[in-house]
Length: 183
Image: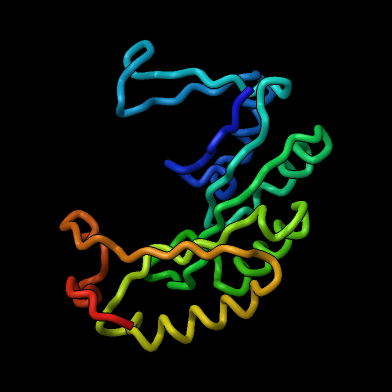
């Protein structure tokens, strides 16, 4: 038996609910790993209910996934969440609904879980910018999100963006600074 850490590489709850359902019905999922192994780097994970202790889902929005969560509950297969809420908006996270909708969804997922220890909030990555996402913006934004989630989670994970050129190139011109002064 094993725990499946699903969607760390991609947001399965947000984008791949139908795929997840089909893979569970098939009883397995194949995935590629950068660490090699298997035929040409592919591994097969059993998704047969009797072989799965539970799932860990990583998401920024699980709205399309609620039917799958209901099916897991009906089969008595536990799940927990790492749920990212940053509130950056469409300029930085174009595929993510508005912060209020994401918070509402977080709370809906939290109610389906045994308790607040089963869902962790990720305020990650912290992207400091010189225009919109300033230190003051982050302090205010973080406090507002934390107040909304109060009592529904016990953990928040935070990290700063690493100023790798690959990451910097994806952000709109003039928004990122690579010096990370203290809050």
